[in-house]
Image (cartoon, rainbow, N blue to C red; front, side, top):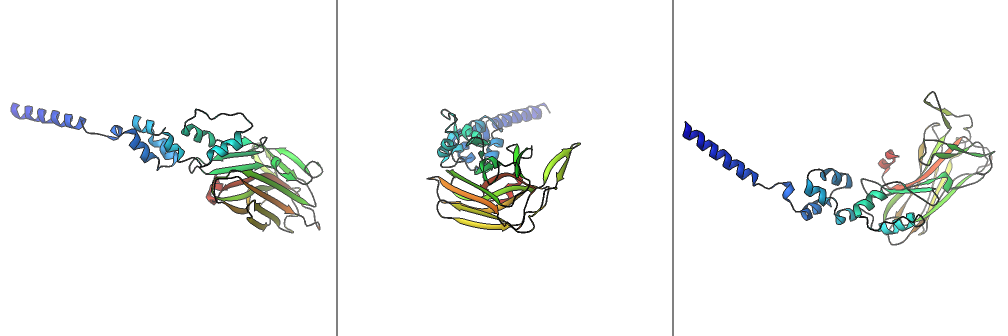
Length: 289
């Protein structure tokens, strides 16, 4: 009985010792772990970095995050931060990626650009203040309304006009890829009463007579035109103006866009203009805005 017990004890201690010598994920070289992490998307990298010390160290490797940055990220930094005096010197690629994933304002605060945290693709917003709007300075036609429903905290509100023209353009080092451009618009003026969101449709008229015309063109000759009736008062809607392709990241592309309704047989009014959005061609991405 005693012999059997001592044998089992020795066997158990030998097994424990052998088990303690087995290697685990924490024993992998950081360079190997980093190579694996480079195939993951950024949120996955951040999650596995919490597994152990080796994964945490590997998740900071420059080559892991450089593969997530746009090829021309230095041109993007130069365009966005050229007048702010912001320095990226000394920052590791992970910190650069994190900084570019924030909404970064430029051109006097009329535009914002950021990288999608999951895909690393470029997204942009251009406020109504960054557009050329016919009659914008005449308070008989247009007013500026503060609102928390805009990322720029204000929108342009059209009371009434015969001739509607909104124009804009942006020259930017877009990374290579396909992009969609949308106008974010709403019929009716929103206000809150006792915490409830209400829509005042008093000035909404004329949009069912003729469709609005949306146009897009690029510096390399791409063009697209669409027509659409504005609809659903009280709801922010993204009206698709068109798509464009950036064939390479070597130079900046100029994109011009417009929205018009110039049929002077009737007036139109009650329109909120928030912004123009440029995002990679992926309609499901609109759900994040």
